[in-house]
Amino acid sequence: MTQNQTIESPFPKSFLASESLLEHLTRGIVGIAALVLAVTLAKDSASLINALGSLGLGVVALIAFRGCPICWTIGLFETTVRSLRRYNMQKSSSI
Image (cartoon, rainbow, N blue to C red; front, side, top):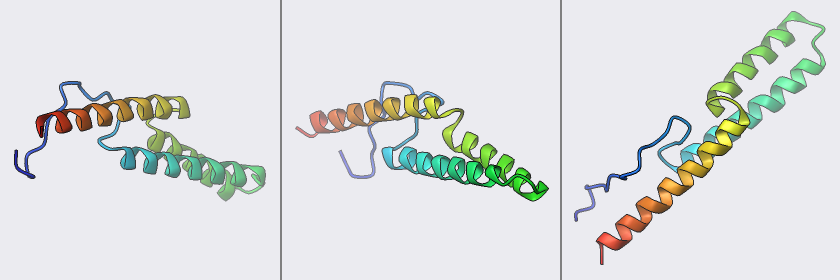
């Protein structure tokens, strides 16, 4: 098998899973940062700009998490399982 060939996983990827763990963890970091900033802005929601900024950051968090934080966690488990299966398939095919 050459380096350019990739092994396709026989297990389909769900909507919540990512292609790699790095991608998934990056989405989680962006989502958590957006949530923290949204809550920080919402504490001082006396101005309309802060309220709209908080709402916008909430939307960014939902997009990054592909739903709620629980959805992101489920996707983390699915991504981890797919990555481990892909690694095991590559390992067994190189023997």
